[in-house]
Length: 73
Image (tube, rainbow, N blue to C red; front, side, top):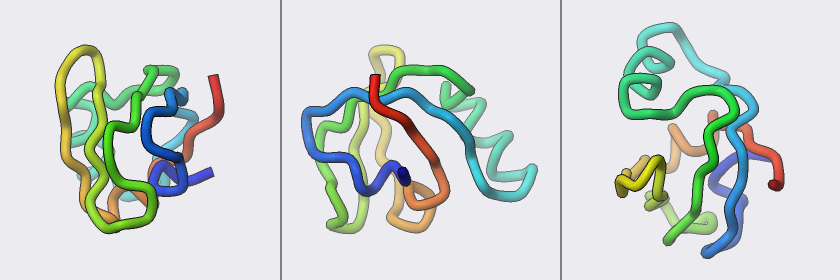
């Protein structure tokens, strides 16, 4: 499921990123790599999604969070 569909407070695992290599590289540099656990702090289909990745808060736009596929932990 896309990251922007995850309810607030849930923790998920990154499965895939469906985008070009430039965006994948940028997200990888931010800590978004396959298998990383992501806790959704705020979002749930309301535009930007605020997540906690490896202890850091990251804000992802709606378009980007829709390209990040995750699975339940």
